[in-house]
Image (cartoon, rainbow, N blue to C red; front, side, top):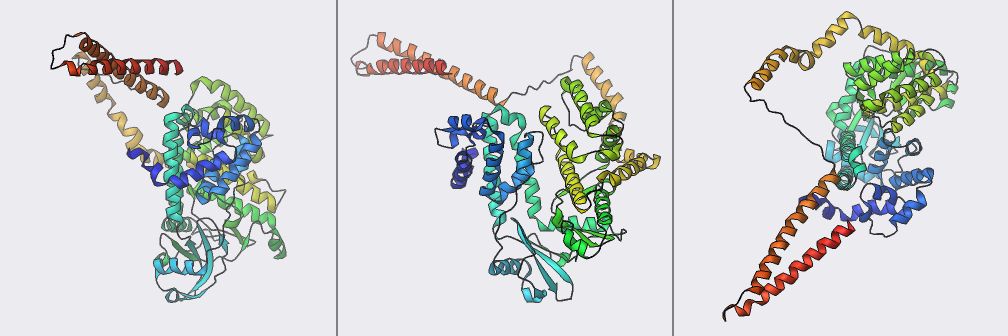
Length: 554
């Protein structure tokens, strides 16, 4: 019973969510994932036939549903826009257009949050601008001045947003569990794992203390690079719901008019922005997973600033080695080597399709590249990779999809500033230099030391383990454990079969017992209970008929 508690606890909100899908003609999704019965409508099957033919309409409807359902679902849609392995390209492109529709928080609510988190407003700020610099679904940003004189921005979380997000996430998890029990498709995709990963990411984004730590880490990563400015965090004033950091004066990279008015070189700014962002990826392995024009600023012609570090991607040594080798494989137009790297990364795990995948990947590389790695058409590469990922059901790790989306965004910003600028003019040389650095003996030695306990040390234990296996086999004590994975649908069918078998045996026993009671010569004392035999006999016949007709329907 406890597994259905979520249905009772949030029944109204769940009806809103499921009803929005049904209302927008998306019953095909509900039915496909075993949730069609939750709508309460009998037209779900008709809806499938009406909408299935037009993917563009369905993709647009899905975006409208997420917009209607609020911040949690807008974020969910934005996350799905990076999952080319489970959604066709038309859905990806539509969900990428999702934007927050929010109204500014009123002054009194702002004051309440600040007072609850920091205390008296006047004790901290000498000036506070109540007109927001930016407003989003999770929070909004204001400019202020501390009592000590520093110009700062104050990021304040919307009142009640955390409880609303947690409620929606709990409902989504409940729907995902139900879907995986009733749909082979949902189980195959791993809907629950997707929701749980999304929940973890979103709850991290709600924690401004985590964002403060992210900002401090990036600040120290670029401490020696005077051409990159990262805001300093005021940790003494930062809490899970309020973040205070330096105000950075500059123009958004999308504000081309202001950049031109200042007389700055657009080409220089686009190169600096690209190099700075690639440094986050290739040098530091810690990058903004969701860059957009609002969080990259041109401070002057020779200085770039990054702000907003709520969503971050992490690349360890092994991931960086994989990405470097993948880039070199693509530059050498070697699809078989690239396929091997993708297999090692866990992206391709079906050996049966490996040959066909290598051929298609080779065709993709040949079509996208005219020459060297500096000639890669990033936008076309992304479109082709989305199609390839969906066709071969590639398991795209979240860091890889975030990285790809971030690179496309940065390239788009560079192109907008300078249409003649080629993203790979910076990316190619930097990637090659970083990869050569990582192949130096001292760096390889450092990498091997870091992997010693996980990969190398167990090799020393192999002879002893092999000796133990042979000894147990020789003494007849070797045991083999088999584990069989059964799909949720098959598990449900087996459970039903066992239940019916048990009930049918009980019905048969009741039938035989009742027949014996009816045939027995009853004494005067027991004759009055003879009707029980007839009742049991009739009930057993009814149960057996129910099983019979149920089997026909099945």
